[in-house]
Length: 286
Ligand code: PAF
View 1 (tube, protein in one colour):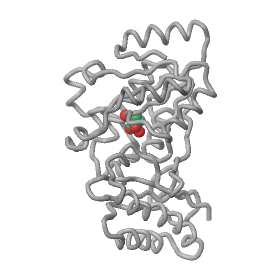
View 2 (view 1 turned 90 degrees about the horizontal axis):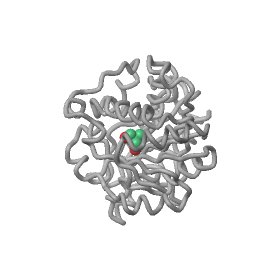
View 3 (view 1 turned 180 degrees about the horizontal axis):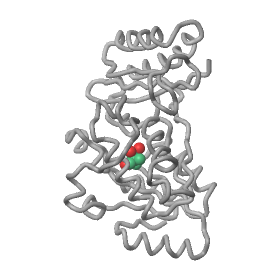
């Protein structure tokens, strides 16, 4: 496995793979890798001849500077994990290697067709502009056949599908397949996240209330309507000392607009556990 920090070097390797007609899979990450990432990477390794994992804490997608500063950076540990699961290249550039000074400060313009106006996009203005900026750049550099994203960041996944399949960028990334990977949970139910590293053992126990409530909501959905389930989820989580819901919305899985029934719906939640902002979601199959 090679660790690459320069775009030009990455391009040279990509060109060499393309000449040999090797299929390339990409797993974009911000590092602080856990079993959830490992499951994406293992799938990528099994489905492609060459696997590239990017490890880049993308400054343009953080609208909270404290969050950016506190984001765990563990490249050595990440590289060790990746070297044991068959990765060929780790791309770990500096912000200056990825962006010009202007790109770093000027919001990336993109037509989200409204997908950025709800939930995460509403709470974190500009966040998805940064995500599309970095992901599109990685796609240009790596030219992957497949790219792997986790369903935990469901709105991000929807936006990436929109970018590749419906936005004007689809002509550039036409043949690229986005592979949706299910949420990986601890045995307890807690969704794996790099942010869990910032939770104390006590907070990890408290945070279980989030997934437990979401699983319970699948049952509630059998007898209650959408609005009533939304209220019950919020009330149940807020009643747990140490947790505070930022939003919980049941939306259509494609348009992300408020759902009126549970058909093709997903409930997306963001909860503060102390200072740590956790997200999770649950699909409904009623
Ligand atoms: O989901 C993430 O970790 C990031 O948003 C991504 C896709 C790697 C872009 O920085």
